[in-house]
Length: 185
Image 1: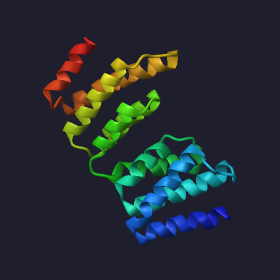
Image 2: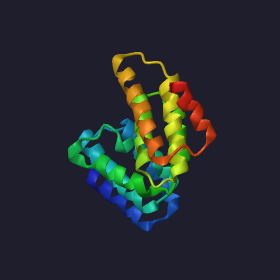
Image 3: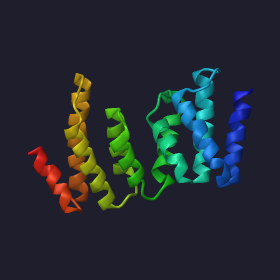
């Protein structure tokens, strides 16, 4: 039941670099991100989340990408460094996170998460073609989603604008990207 012992156990599992444990640690971090089944409070949850992030860093398995993504934008305190460490690990976990982030952009219902997926792709080591395709998808999402409150309207505007910036930086690699640009005009 000791939080620090549990955290050290997660880090120790990560040190084994045995991918057999990566699924369990990824689910553990996902549950922490959602605050599922936690009785110890935020401080204990943050200690455990940081340990899970460090373990997933050692495993270097794609299964950890989505829980790390949500930890990087999650509820964690700035004092705990969970978000900073999750972002650091996230940015180097996979060579090309384009497909994972495309799924988040398409399927996630929260607009801020869609915007964060675009930002994660822009920071990543993905090839320019992948970044351009994610930027085009972000622009598309910015066009097809209807704002329900003022903050949604602002987020959609930022997503379209940031998508254009990423697209300009990386160039439209496919002709279909131009269709999205024409739709904006």
